Image (cartoon, rainbow, N blue to C red; front, side, top):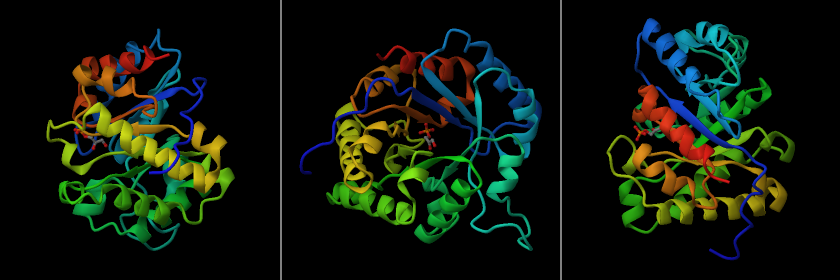
Length: 263
Ligand code: 13P
């Protein structure tokens, strides 16, 4: 793996982001957001983001209070025009969303999102002024064959090939091993740290030590209150992208507090 870049300076805030996926009806989404907001008063050092389904973005953005940020779960690979059913990055931004998740493995695997589509979405999102949570992560077979570092590196190389140093400031990486998503099987804190350090080292070669050190790298995959502390304590883990546990305010807030408790 070569020499590792220094872990990020502690001035960077951790991020805890809840990916609600295709869950909740509109009133339930509002209720969940309100419950989450009610628990954030004492949170100073952690950025908290929720990613509700797209139809709810505008209403949630309008009703949110405080520092909670809203994210879309994906955007179109095209700009404005005759693309029935697609939501462009600019449209999402105009709802009040500030973030978008790009390249989630569920989109890659179930909706045939190619590396090229991921690249296009990432670039359009950055052009629209959205911050991006860029997902990467290997399948179980990739890990078992020892190919996981190469796999993740090629996903990042591909997605970021045209992203300038300046634009990269708007990107957060989410490492989500596919075998850990929704399975209850979490990467061990050592496995997470090893991959996060590898990613930071690669970023350091691509964007330089300062940008690499400043980039938040989140862990996702069955992160829950019982394991968040240990995962977030790793030097290169800067918070989490949370699926199932983000659907319950109490669990999600416990994970936020675990991020907040790190120095
Ligand atoms: P789970 O936390 O449900 O494993 O999902 C992780 C994820 O896919 C977040 O984007």
